Image (tube, rainbow, N blue to C red; front, side):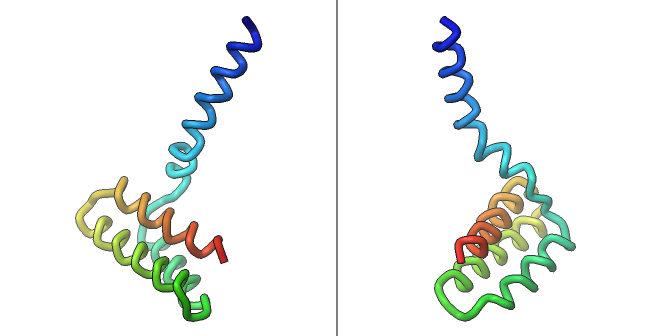
Amino acid sequence: MILKSVATLTFIVALAGPTLAQTDVICDTAAITKAEQQIGQIPDGTKKIESAKELAMAKDAMTANDLEKCKSHLGNAIKGMDAM
Protein backbone atom coordinates (compact mmCIF):
# COMPACT_ATOMS: atom_id res chain seq x y z
CA MET A 1 0.00 0.00 0.00
CA ILE A 2 2.78 2.45 0.91
CA LEU A 3 4.73 1.47 -2.21
CA LYS A 4 1.68 2.18 -4.35
CA SER A 5 1.26 5.61 -2.72
CA VAL A 6 4.92 6.45 -3.26
CA ALA A 7 4.70 5.39 -6.89
CA THR A 8 1.60 7.54 -7.42
CA LEU A 9 3.24 10.55 -5.75
CA THR A 10 6.37 10.10 -7.87
CA PHE A 11 4.24 10.02 -11.03
CA ILE A 12 2.39 13.20 -10.04
CA VAL A 13 5.64 15.01 -9.28
CA ALA A 14 7.09 13.92 -12.64
CA LEU A 15 4.09 15.38 -14.45
CA ALA A 16 4.12 18.59 -12.43
CA GLY A 17 7.87 19.16 -12.82
CA PRO A 18 7.79 20.89 -16.22
CA THR A 19 4.83 23.01 -15.16
CA LEU A 20 6.57 24.12 -11.98
CA ALA A 21 9.78 24.87 -13.86
CA GLN A 22 7.87 27.15 -16.21
CA THR A 23 6.75 29.31 -13.28
CA ASP A 24 10.37 30.15 -12.48
CA VAL A 25 10.62 32.26 -15.65
CA ILE A 26 9.76 35.90 -15.08
CA CYS A 27 8.67 37.73 -18.17
CA ASP A 28 9.69 41.35 -17.80
CA THR A 29 11.84 43.86 -19.62
CA ALA A 30 14.95 42.97 -17.61
CA ALA A 31 14.64 39.25 -18.37
CA ILE A 32 14.12 39.89 -22.07
CA THR A 33 17.08 42.27 -22.20
CA LYS A 34 19.27 39.70 -20.45
CA ALA A 35 18.16 36.99 -22.89
CA GLU A 36 18.90 39.30 -25.85
CA GLN A 37 22.42 39.85 -24.56
CA GLN A 38 22.98 36.14 -24.06
CA ILE A 39 21.66 35.28 -27.51
CA GLY A 40 23.95 37.93 -28.99
CA GLN A 41 26.95 36.04 -27.57
CA ILE A 42 25.97 32.73 -29.16
CA PRO A 43 27.94 31.83 -32.31
CA ASP A 44 25.78 31.91 -35.42
CA GLY A 45 23.86 28.71 -35.99
CA THR A 46 20.55 26.93 -35.61
CA LYS A 47 20.38 27.35 -31.82
CA LYS A 48 20.90 31.10 -32.12
CA ILE A 49 18.18 31.40 -34.77
CA GLU A 50 15.68 29.31 -32.79
CA SER A 51 16.38 31.14 -29.53
CA ALA A 52 15.99 34.50 -31.31
CA LYS A 53 12.64 33.39 -32.76
CA GLU A 54 11.39 32.30 -29.34
CA LEU A 55 12.56 35.59 -27.86
CA ALA A 56 10.71 37.55 -30.55
CA MET A 57 7.53 35.60 -29.76
CA ALA A 58 8.06 36.31 -26.04
CA LYS A 59 8.35 40.04 -26.79
CA ASP A 60 5.14 39.95 -28.84
CA ALA A 61 3.33 38.13 -26.03
CA MET A 62 4.58 40.61 -23.45
CA THR A 63 3.36 43.50 -25.61
CA ALA A 64 -0.04 41.78 -25.80
CA ASN A 65 -0.04 41.34 -21.98
CA ASP A 66 -0.16 37.54 -22.35
CA LEU A 67 2.30 36.71 -19.58
CA GLU A 68 1.79 32.94 -19.68
CA LYS A 69 2.63 32.84 -23.37
CA CYS A 70 5.56 35.18 -22.75
CA LYS A 71 6.89 32.91 -19.99
CA SER A 72 6.56 29.89 -22.25
CA HIS A 73 8.45 31.45 -25.16
CA LEU A 74 11.10 33.03 -22.94
CA GLY A 75 11.59 29.67 -21.23
CA ASN A 76 12.02 28.01 -24.63
CA ALA A 77 14.58 30.64 -25.65
CA ILE A 78 16.52 30.05 -22.45
CA LYS A 79 16.37 26.26 -22.90
CA GLY A 80 17.68 26.69 -26.45
CA MET A 81 20.66 28.64 -25.13
CA ASP A 82 21.34 26.02 -22.44
CA ALA A 83 21.43 23.24 -25.03
CA MET A 84 24.67 24.60 -26.46
